[in-house]
Amino acid sequence: MNLSTISIKLPSNIDDSDLEKYANIDSLEDQYNKTYCYIRRSVEPVGFFTHNDIILKLYHMKRENQDLPQNLVDSLNDFLLNEVENNRIDLKQKIGFAILSQGFLSINIWGRGNVLFTQTYTIEDSFPELSPKTLEKTGVACTWEIKVMKYEYDLWHDYLKTKMSLEDKKIYLENFLSGNLDLENSKLKVIF
Image (cartoon, rainbow, N blue to C red):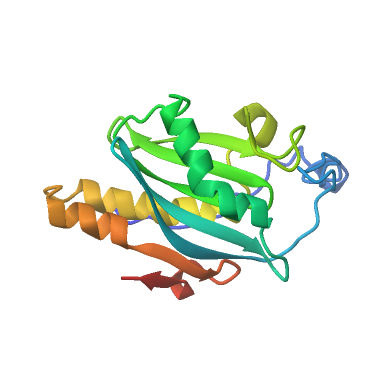
């Protein structure tokens, strides 16, 4: 059975006046105390964080026309090392990826075979440094980050269907998403 997209009409007891109260952007503030504003993003692979106990693929996710905070870029490897050395990351299968964006970091570790475990950090309450926050506070990912996660999910899913040889592991690790995240996924550039 192939996957497809279908449309199901709303129940007749939901009319336009009911819809007025749904899907309105809330007034919750981000890590910079600003409410939501649509800003395009791009993703850039920046290599690896390696440790005796874990390897992470590293991404920078950038807002259009805005550089990432330089202190977070410069300190990312040291920050990750500190989290690993102080046992603040459950290493599970010892592989995953991290996404550094505007005042936000997600560390994503594969475990239980095909499950992605995510830890989030923001500069909220700790500016200009990152500090851990619960998913209830940060959410799992924004619509832009989920595109990177989806790419990694698909790549990991393909890896799980292999013999999981050393070559298969290299294929997972050496492939990154790169480019403008506002494009359809089919148009995103994959690095080999």
